Image (cartoon, rainbow, N blue to C red; front, side):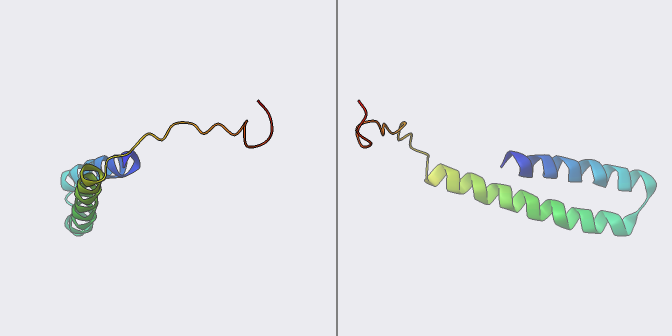
Length: 68
């Protein structure tokens, strides 16, 4: 998720640059990518909310390999 947030932020910056230079075709393509990235982030957040992580701890293999 952190990488996707970076990508989303980069897309926003690129859209601002394209608007500054008047690259209309470029804006449309970047906007489509931004929309997809935001949808993916929303989906990831929803899944994370539904399935919180559980800390299972660190396994101790010493007894299973004959060392104590």
